Length: 91
Image 1 (spheres, rainbow, N blue to C red):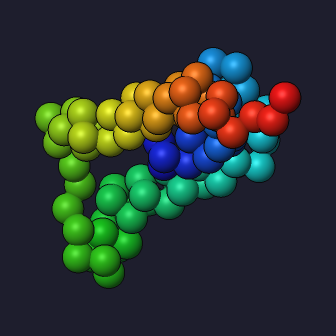
Image 2 (cartoon, rainbow, N blue to C red):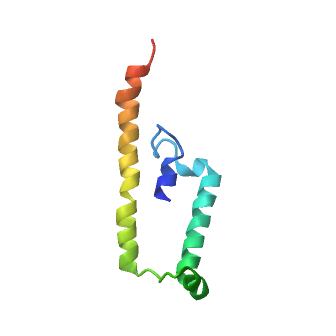
C-alpha cells in the first residue's frame, strides 16, 4: 500500500503532489487496510483465511520492509526529473 502512494505521480515527488490530492486513492488504501485488519483480527475470518494476528513486533518488521519502497521510488523520481528528462527536452 505504500507503493500505491507513489502512484499519485510518475515523476513528481510526494512532497510536491501529496496523496490527498487523489481522494479515491486514499479511500482505496483505507479500505484495503480495513480488510487486512478484519482478516487478521476477526476470529472467523482469520480461521477462514488460515492466518494468525500479527504482534506489535511483527507489524514493526512489516513497516520496516515496506517503507523503503517510498524512499527508493522518490530517489528514482528525483533522478528522472533532474538527469534523464533534461536529456529528452527539445529546445
